[in-house]
Structure formats: C-alpha cells, structure tokens
View 1 (cartoon, rainbow, N blue to C red):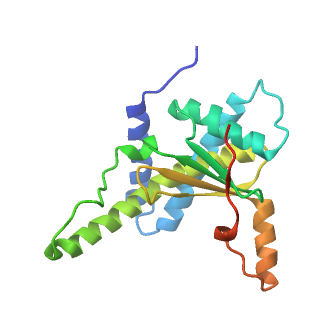
View 2 (tube, helix red, strand yellow):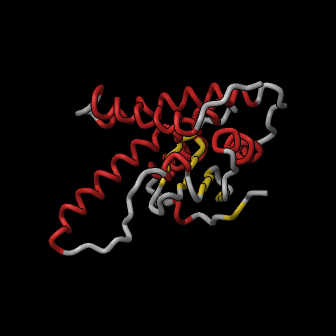
Length: 202
C-alpha cells in the first residue's frame, strides 16, 4: 500500500520552503530564491513521474503526455483532474485548475471596496500578496516541468493567477521557443496571443 501525506502537511511544507528560501537563505535575492524553489519542484516532478509511469508504455506524442499530466498525474497530486486544457496546436498548452488547492488557503480578496485613505496601504498589501503567491507558484511550475522533462518533453512552464484561486499553467515546448527566437532574430513580431486556441481535453 502506497504511503500518503495529509494535505495540511503538504501545505505547511510548501509554505516553509517558500518562507525559508525567500526570508532566510536568499532574502535579498528573490530571483535566486525562485530558481531554487523551482528546482525543488523539478526534482519532485521528475521522481513522481518515474513512479507513476513505471508500468506504462511510452507516450506516442506530446498530446498524450499532456493528457497524462492533466488526468492521472494531477489526480495523484490533488485528487482531481485539470478542469480545462487548451492548445494552439503549435507546441503551447494551457492547463487550467479552477480552484488550485495549494493557493485556496491564501487570502487575497481584491473585490473588497476600500476608502481612498486606505488606498496606499491596501495597494502595498496587494503587492506583497502577489509576490508571496508568485513565489508559491514556482514549486508547482517546477513539478510540471520536471514531469514533462522526464517524459522527454523539455519545456518552459509559467503560471498565471489573475483569477485567484484559479490557476492557469502555461507550457511552451522548446521546439516552439526556438522557432519564436528565430522569428524574433529575423525581425518578425510574434505573440502567443495571436494564436488560435482550441480545447483539447477529453
């Protein structure tokens, strides 16, 4: 029987990792702290994927690997599947979790109306919340990057939580990244927002 860890323990561990790297080890170097947190997530994703795919045949293409992340891998982590998957069919995928569990306990209600006298302090509080939340996102981004790398898909992973607690995870495969760099070197303007997105999740 597989050993399990309670959700509260995992939440506390993630909070402690972020706090230690941001406030103790690299208090004045947030970029380095972010890289270290992402690297820890990468190792976790690598090891979990090896465990979860040990008896699986090799995935035939990138889409099958992404679907594995959205369904089986996400379920093992959060006891639910990704709510939505979109792709531009050019090597970029967006994984959407409408209530990302690791952020659901973080408070940040931007809908509360405030007086003009409290505007500055509220803005500062919002900025601190955004910074703290962004640091927490490096860990799951590292997990996804590590998982996909183990499946033979090198990529860049980032996250957006503009609709907190919903979380959109953007995966850009290195093949697309090289193409964007080449187009940029040629003077061709390229934007991911220009791509046509379609749902690919069944």
